[in-house]
Image 1 (cartoon, rainbow, N blue to C red):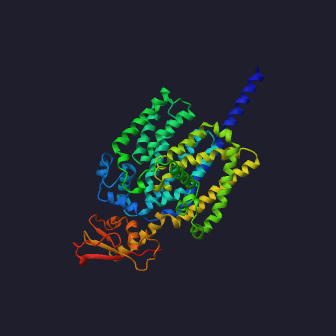
Image 2: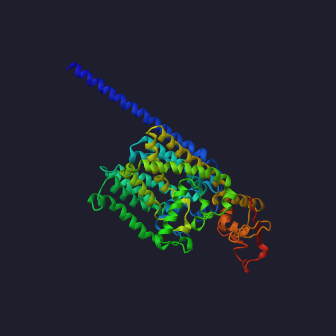
Image 3: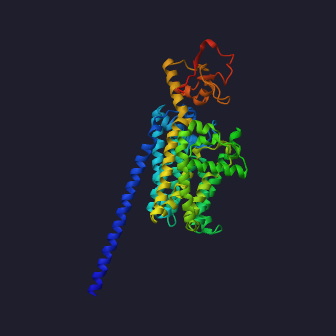
Length: 513
């Protein structure tokens, strides 16, 4: 009896030590993740935080420039006439708070976006950990997420705060939902974060489909199961109320680029481009690929240095991933987690694949989460196998990082928000230097620069580019704090004969490029 008791005590101590050892290892991994979260974005995207405002940024700030804090409730109960979509939390409320606090200082706006990327990375880790129960898979997922080149787009294009906030709320909603089996409080928190997501961006509506897939794949519930209906119904009711009250489908802009195309071929093509972008390819490549995959020779002429590195690297990474898909085919097909993540990736892009003329890597914010976890699954399995598999896994990870890093650097000089922000800063600084103050209701006339090079007919002259870069008169109204300022652009507007030309401020639009 005594020997048996001693044996049990020793066994208990060994189990406790084993648990402590596992806990220590897990804690170290959490520390690594935390370090990545707060170091990687700063190292990779530090240049983006010095970028200025451009285009849509001026428009969003101009809409709220004459609003006050007491106007915030009205944002939630009525759609502002300038807008087609209902995003009162991430757009009107956010921009009002930031504009009242920081004015036209872009640094705090960029820092908020960067902080949201870092928080998003942490939430990706938690979601992956909850789904896979694997610290290695979760760690790989967060590394792939943080290294993704689409974050440079989200940081240059300040309006991305709308999708970044929506992502924050959706991942919180999912985390609470995953823990809500026996907790009404967590279920209600999940619903609440879903609502906050809807108030940030309409993409949040896909959460209904993601929860449905979660219940059917991971929880193995039948479509007609009462438990599924009971848990999904509140989300569906809120989603339907949101669609009905915001008239989302009736408010699409009239421009051709916003008109849906219900073609399977077009949908597959658009989905393919989104997948290439989230895998690290730069967005502008789509402009050089014609019908039947014909390549414009200017692609290699202008960006040959990038593709001489990117294409072989992309090929190596693609072959490694293909190899893993073949090796782990049966394991993947039997994995409920794989099916859930793959379906969630498709559902996250579903609202956008019907708009081939309006596709943008800006819409990959949510899809990039599922892409990272999807890629991390076979990579983590390979890292736990023999040396050959580990080498292939490391090659795939390094390939993804190299391509993303190259694209991040390329976005500095090719992405429209980065280039136009630089031009906007130069133009407005010059205007402010020449005209420190103007009369209320002043009229500006923006002339063409005769030395501006011809690029293309659609591109136009310097005044046309200034019109887009400065969002018409919006930037001038913000610069002088006067919503009554009028601005006319030589190529875009005929000069109104009713205005006294003697009182008009004539300015020539000249750019740093």
